[in-house]
Length: 164
Image (tube, rainbow, N blue to C red; front, side, top):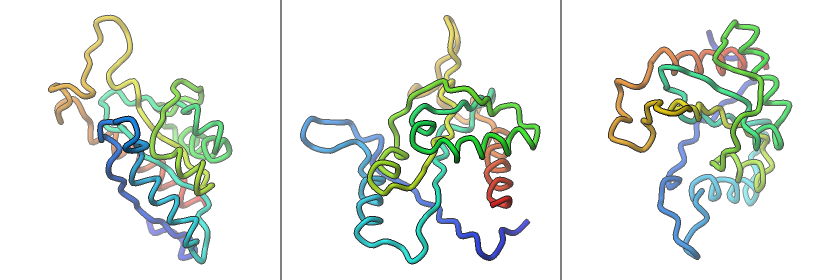
């Protein structure tokens, strides 16, 4: 399915987030801060109406909650995407706030004033005593990821875009 002709989508890949923070050197979100400052200095002809950060959405046991900063900065966008997931019968999107994540959506919200949400499965690794930990370990391998989970998130975002 094609998006309507009047719906534009930019795919932006940020770099530098995983750089180790050192006092006085950087603010951690190098790519997204640069993008946000450039957006302000050189505004596009048609301003962005929103942004969606896809973050760690490949867990075999996909669970995506409202992320606290997304809720605080872009509540309507959060509600809209989660409502689309519910409409589609996607149970992995759970409409409750669970985590507060500092990530690339913050400069977009704070500097560029683009309402941006972080769709993140931060329960990868699963919570609980004795639960396997994959993130940032040698167990963070394709076998612990799911193409179905990735496709599910892309499906929800695509269907949400189609409805705009």
